[in-house]
Length: 251
Image (tube, rainbow, N blue to C red):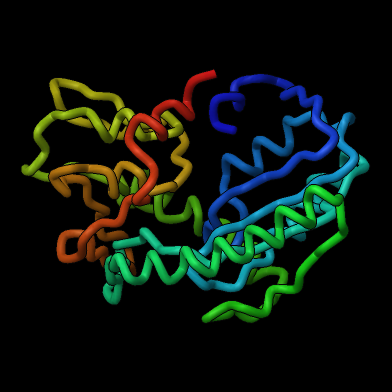
């Protein structure tokens, strides 16, 4: 998706088209929202979405339907997969163990078989989200504000607090991996150090944080919210390499 966001219109030719993404602040990621807005879906006959999350309630499929309605389309099917969490800024964060990954992976594999059958046969399946570990009361205004939390931390840190949301501490060895995995190209290596450019939007994927081999990338404290990235470990997807992520920026 990211590699195509510089286009005014993103063409498609498929009859069955799907959007697969992680949940951000209970809603869809910034890049996904931008992608759907730009995509020409005239050829599509069947649309589906798959969201991955660590357990929070998710109401983003309604948001996708609102975007698709402007194109006279809607989601025929949508699914949620519970997976591991990489937000190590929270005090109670724990790195997923190999056992955690295998346990979740087994459940995901079983569900994927069912999802595959539904998609291949173009079955309508708009499952209700009931398998979440923690919820959030629905209120139009509160949920709208919560969606803005995807950018809130970055905005407060950079434009109110006067500091970068992310930064690299003294452990940085100038390897440049953070620049390679930063999907929005916000990081620019300057004098062998990463600089988070304030005029470039962040997609809040946390790849720069979790793929830093020295655990040098940190999140700054922002007003009212303390970051625990210095104390906590990191979790990068066990099957996604730096090269895999970097290639997402290429057409």
